[in-house]
Length: 464
Image (cartoon, rainbow, N blue to C red):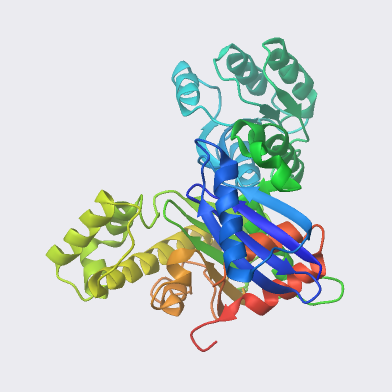
């Protein structure tokens, strides 16, 4: 047997999957607590013991690859010039690289902005601003202010190429770790986020893995390749695009409903599908990720209830308002607890459905009617996901929930909301064994095995 060990150092649990590469099958799974605060090897050792207890003696692994969202994940602050342009491009680069965006700033940084950045204590700062040959004053002013700030994290400069070296020089003179990469927006309206994503990943590997203490377990695996969200996005890309030998699923959306956030990943062009619709704003990245920090099933359950309406959730769960409030208060008081009673499970289902619906609506584009001198025009902002052929759900609440199909169905287009460009008629699938991260890690070394594994284990739900 030729085997691979795939590891996800999560904030709560370290999860591992053992894969038979020749058969592209799961050998077994295990998990242990993520002991980041003490010694991360303890949690990994427990996960390996759990796996060994399930499958017997562990095989010799050809690959031992890991991803991580431990210790709060990869926290990033972005700084750009115009909110809708270079600042938005920097945001897309950060999210696509698997970062958790903790702050986004535009125009010149004020004293208050600097104080906020210092308080956020990010793992990385992405400094952008100006097209190539365009405005250079703002990025240089912001570099000077960051150089004088107390932040010590790595800073990636991805702005106007004519000012980038000077900006980096200011930061280096202040002993800040600096990386210079290509401009995230070299021309007006043109995105170029991949070089910045690559730089973020490299800084993550070189510095953040050490800062989080993950390299303490270095002898137990070969490499930490990327943040966990980036691994999931890479797995989604592989399943969508396929390989030279195996076709993929085509345009797809992945919805990851977690305890702290709900992440949505799309692999699609997002171009208008309706005749006569004109795209507006920045071009959308083919690989797009959004993070809804107010839609966590545990940490942010009250925010979901506020967004969806507690009365709506209560009705969906077959509860009265007092019963729903009592369960919600219980979740807030014990965010590590799991639903036990039938009423709690129904309320959890209602929360998951609401989180999916709101998160996908935010991720998808919208179309509006704009009056012009030549008459009304349909204008699209964001991605049109109408032609997406597959929607995949992942995360514990979907994998172990009572009705994942009903939750995923909330991602679909609704005739009552014609402005929202959500998927119209996709197949619904479930990542029930939590394999998307494993597929993403394997994609770089064993793409065929990763693709075969993923296609076999994204299980259809709801009769699709």
